[in-house]
Amino acid sequence: MTFSVNDYVDYCVCAAALISENKDYITELDAATGDGDHWANMNLGFQKLVDSNQALRGESYSGLFKKIGMTLMGTIGGSSGVLYGSAYLSAAKVVGDTDEMDVRILNQVLSAMIEGICERGNSGPGMKTMIDTLDAAAGELKAALAEGLDEEGALRRMERGAKRGMESTARMAAVRGRAYYQADKGVGHLDPGAVTMYYQLKTLAECMLKKR
Image 1: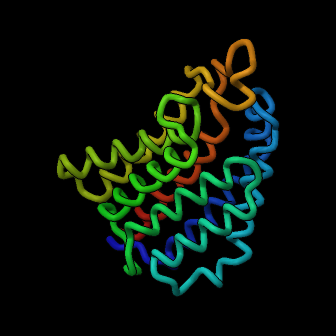
Image 2: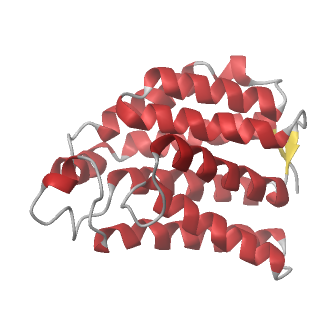
């Protein structure tokens, strides 16, 4: 299975649609622990990718990830834009000039994204952020490949890991952000950033599975 640059752009369009559809849910989550603007910021960034999707096609993966990173950094407000930009710019460094991606390259991409986010945000797993979703997904994908699972099994395991990582944030106390200043530090609430990251990884797994 190979996943072309154009396939990745199509995935971005699908992820944008899922984020858009969940306006009320994400806004409600963020209102409980944050500023209530996470959905608006994420939707703005991903709709910008939709609007510019024709300009993203025909690139190498490195060029695509650079453009996505700069687009999201310039349109998503707050710290999320900077972190998403850092994730994609870090991923651009590991994919080279290839115009096709498989699950092994995806494994490298997710690891690079985590590194970029953690370094820029001075953060890590267990802090009730999108990193918890991404890190759990990457861990499951890496383990699946090491165990010799086929592409379908690896992608499905990645999606399950992403869901588990997202759900784990409900049990976590926030380390920074507005939730940190609440009496309960957000315990009992899912982190909205973890949820929108899950939407992306779930959609990516589904889109890649269709290319088998």
